[in-house]
Length: 126
Image 1: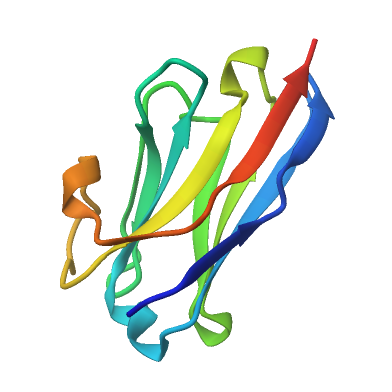
Image 2 (image 1 turned 90 degrees about the vertical axis):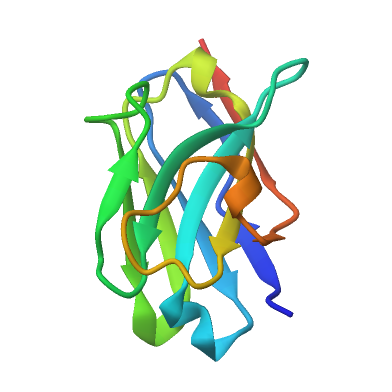
């Protein structure tokens, strides 16, 4: 079983930046796709960005393109989400998740992810 731990959330002013980290316990994490999702109060959990640990291909939601960047450090079993130009509507709990056996374009559907972290809160103050 893969265990995922997110960190890096916090309180930031609108226009500021944060970098989230997702660390996996499993060495074969390198062969999974990893996605970042977020969930605001009273809203569905939505896809933010994903990366293929095998091919390096990335995909991101239109709402964060140009502001958020997903990257991976295979040696550290870690995936990052760099968030710049944060807006109040980015405020949510952010989760990372792994999609086992996905080697191409990372999926954006929540149902395709197998293991989830506990989440980290991002609060954006205007």
